Length: 369
Image (cartoon, rainbow, N blue to C red):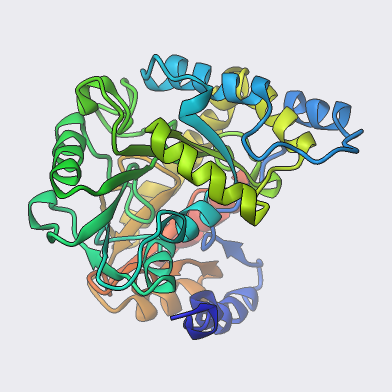
C-alpha cells in the first residue's frame, strides 16, 4: 500500500452537517476539531520573534538548549528523571511522527501495529502505509505475537480515557516480551479532570513505576499544540530508548524532517514556563464545567473523558443521527465512526471553542431537552 491507496480524508463526510449547523440563526458552534482558539502565550511568541534571523539550516536533532529543555520538562512535569539529550528528539508536530513511525522503524507486511480500540485514525494509517496489519486492542494480553509496535494513548483521543501505572506497566511488559516498541501518545497529559487525575499527575509510559527504571523499548510522544496553543507551530517531541531515538534521528536526517529554528527557540520558552499552561488549563476546566452538564441534560451519556480535550458522548443511536440532531442546534461534533468500528453511537465534542461559543452551545443543548 502507498499514499495513493489511502481512503478519502474522513472529515470530508462531515461537510453537509457543517452546512446544516451554519444555517442556525445564531451561528455555528464548531466543537468538531480540537484546534486551539486561544492566543499563543506572549512568552512563546516573543521567543519566536527574537529567533527570526534563521539563515542556517536547523538541526534535525534539535538545538542543545531544546534537548535540555525537553529533558528538564520530563523531570519536572512528568516524573521522569535521568533523560539526557540522547533520549529526546523534536518532531514536526506529533501527527507526522505517529503516521511515519512504522516506516521509520522498518516495519512492513507481516508485522502488526497495535492501537487503542477508540483511536485517532493516524495510528492505522501509519500501519497501512507500510503494509503492516493494524490491530485494535486495549488489552495487552491479546496482542498477537507478530506485534512490532504497540500504541497506547493516555488521555485518549477521542475518549479521554486515562491509563494508570498498572495498565501502562502491563503494556510495557507485554511489548518487551514480544520484542515490540511501546509508543505512548501523551499529548493531553497536562489535562486531567476526574479523580484522581484532578489532583495527581497523569503518568507517563516513561515513569520509573512503569518501566522499572529502564526505558528500553519505550517511547513517549508529546505535543505543545494543546497545552501551549502552538498547533500552528507544529511543535512536538519524543523521548525514550536512546537506541531507538538514534535510529529515528538517522532516518529523519535523510528525510529532512527538521523543525524551523525559530520554532525550536519558541519551544524552549514554552517548556520552561509552567504559568501559561496552568492558565490554559483553567480555561478548559471552565468550558468543560459548562458543556458537560448541558450535554448530559440533553440526553447524552458521557463515557471516559477523565482527561483531555473532549467529551465522548452517546445518546444510544447512530452517531450520524446524533450529528444531525446537534447540527439542527447549530452545533458541529465528530462522529464515533471516525475512531474505529466499535463506537458507532458516540460523538466527540471538543472543548476548543471560545467561552462565548461554549456558553451558546450549552444554552441550546439545555433548551432542547
